[in-house]
Image (cartoon, rainbow, N blue to C red; front, side):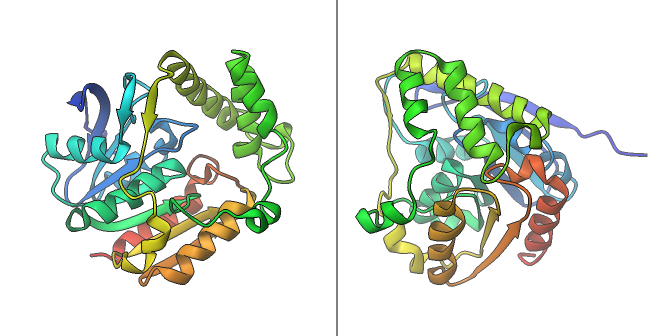
Length: 282
């Protein structure tokens, strides 16, 4: 008989906004940071599993899910530090997807003593070289201009659908090839973020280390790179290869038949890779 998960939920007042969080379990902390097209629900299949053996924390970054967004400059990295401070977490394994991974790497460079391990899911370091040759090798997806036009026109529903095509359907698949429940969840999560961003147009995010790509050799913390085989090549090849080649203590896992959200689409394979790697840190 499965044991009922005892989840603590709440809001933390952090740097002028309220961040919604959920935590459960005991032991070493594992913190999940979602992608820019998602919120804490990106980790629906990981949060309860990891909480069996660790203290699992997931939260909505400002402007996502239940968390507020205000105009003005901010840093997701500083928000994460403040949230961990409020919750009394002094060290953790950070698991981040896409922009969430970039935030986690920024955090690891800024507060290295607080990070036991780093998991970069379909993510990339800030500041990777981006000249004409790279742009030619890794062009924007065909929907990119249409997304921008839809946002400018205020058609956020269309923009969200187009971004789902890019990030969830990925390469070589049509919408009907993907679980509609996964597509629907990402569409809903992304639409919340698009609406919040539209309502606070003067909010501007920056990283503490815009040049993270120049500091990969200094990331001595154990690192796991997870990619989806159907994701954009700029992530699966360019960014992932840079991390694997230059981070000293790194492993890489490629999950087949999924694009930018392997935690939702292929949870069994994702959880196996994550849990096996977490055991190596014990």
